[in-house]
Image 1 (cartoon, rainbow, N blue to C red):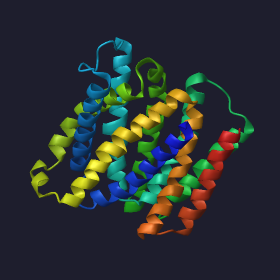
Image 2 (cartoon, one colour):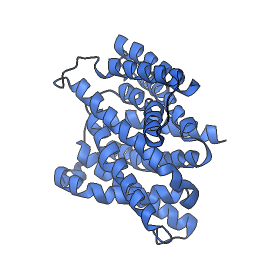
Image 3 (cartoon, rainbow, N blue to C red):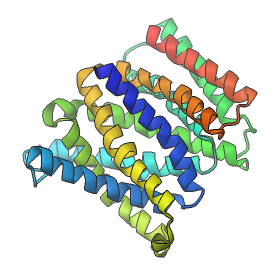
Length: 289
């Protein structure tokens, strides 16, 4: 059952890449994320109140855990989601999904650093191969930041790094407070922390002119792409080892490419195919190690 839920989570995430890209063709990233974050935070609070009869989200939260929840909110919305939206504006859904498939390798490196462990030769080789494949995809249009595609890929990679740290730091809180409550609280803090950026950079006067189609896409990003997606992710982290959950990120480039191919919105390049296969091979080597 848990693996089925992870598959659903990855399908939602894959659709998020495609729908997010389409929304960003019309809306600037600050406004799109401001609306997404407010919708997600509001929806999560309503769910917590309805399901747990808990009006005060913070009652019973230890002070040290509260600080970690603030950090999770900062890593998720102002860093991960905002930089992701900025990057997705320049690159393709297939590229962004492939870069998120690097999560297991980045998580493993962070765990090594935190615990001071040593990697065996399989994991070391896997990391090198994965990052080589990722570099091919990131710089498929050249290493210059003048290339919009390269700029987008680099921004997405930064977002993935924040997502990986978010994954590691959030796991210990799940057994204490549950996936739903942790998601609701960190999303609330993340929204509050993003408000100064969103309100100063987003053109709020454009909200009345947003079309019905874009509103549906924003609702998807807020309710499914944020609420359901993160609840399922953290729920799985509470049941399985971090590495086993992270490896499911490998489904994203496959699912995203299939969906984009069906919709006719994907352009496969030799660098994307070759680098993508190399990156996924490297991640598999890390897991085998």
